Amino acid sequence: MHGQNYEEFILGVSGFLTAYYVFIAIMNAVAALYLWQSGRAKPLFRFPIVGFMVSTAHIWVIVTAIFLMLGAGATNGGASVLSLSTSTRDLIDSWMNPITYSLGTLGILSVVFVARKFFVKPIVAWSLLNLSLLFMGLSMTDMEFAAIVMKPDNVPIVAMIYLLGYFTWLGAYRAVQNDERIARGEQPLESLDNEKVLVWPDLVYTELICMIVVTAILLLWGVGLMAPLEEPASTVQTPNPSKAPWYFLGLQEMLVYYDPWMAGVVLPSLIVGGLMAIPFIDFNPKGNGYYTIAERKFAYCTFQFGFLVLWVTLIVMGTFLRGPNWNFFGFYETWDQHKVQALNNVDLSQYFWVNLLQMGRPKAPDGSSTAMTVVYIAVRESPGILLLLFYFVGGPPAMVIYNKFFRQLFLRMGFMRYMVLSNLILLMGLLPLKMVARWVVNLKYFISIPEYFLNF
Image (cartoon, rainbow, N blue to C red):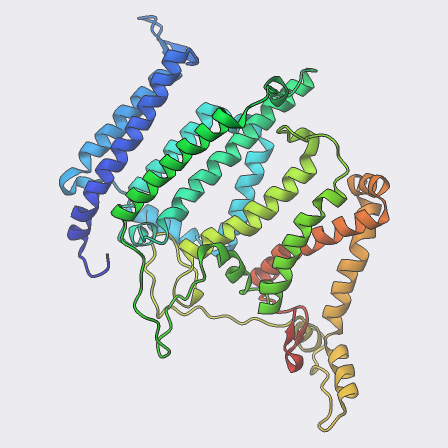
């Protein structure tokens, strides 16, 4: 899309936006028809004079009409008026930075979890879906936003974000239903539908239908989108930004805060090891075979924090918000390769010896033996070493002493299983702690030993 003027861009995107808004209108019309025919439309209010009862089905009919009007307005280059104002886009870009994005995501997910009984309501979830699709459509009239979102590499990632949202909502919706049923002394929904299902024909037919649908989607995808092929690789020219495949962008984002050995080897190994350890450390017999949150709050929150906050949000950040030189850009900001962000990252040892004690960092005299050099390095990095020892050695007992929940876990799990769990939690928490330390005090490393290429 670069090289086009805005008028040419709008003419090129108008057809897509027309089809986009019409598709959303059809989606809402189907929802209204389903609610009306199934009798699931809930009454909202009654007009006092005519006595007409307005239900949720009528609301989605109105939404259908609105999106049809948007689709009609987007034709023949009219999409330029269906866009966010420049001041709104500038305001969003001014607020977008790694701190706002990460803490904002955590805050939103926390609110959704606390008020999950409200957010899992179908009418609320469907309203949020429509608002997100409307925001997407209004943003598509921005050249920079469209260039990123409509890039063939990124189109499936946008689709996967919506799929992830749907399945996360579905699991929470069923869990809230089961929690309410269990509180009333009833069985979970899964216990009511325990009839044996035969592989043939039930499962085979379902898999066959899914296979046909996926094949059709892949055919349409292959015809409608150009293959994201680049020019042959060159040893004299490196792509900027040089990004890993989308499923590794979370690891690439971790490289901003950790050395490659930590972000690329240790942390992924801990993720795999932690998943393998779940059957060993899980002692709760509840929640097996049915959705629930109330009976497994700690496990649910821990997994969702690790998966959504520390993995998915990093992938989204690396895909849509990291540009040339791995700088952070807003949704509507131009990816300027000459953008320079002044960074003055400082090691913890420098904070301690230079800034706090006003003295130089310990350094082995020239010609010192290897053993003497190691001693000086240990003294120099002693603040970071002691801090991490206090974190990992003192953390597990402190959690037991000062927190009733972890005290009960320790009593039920025993020493070994509790130590595995607590250290996995502490290691998981080290990533957001390092991110916050980088943002707040420009901390580079807790321990920096460049002499042996070891930094932490």
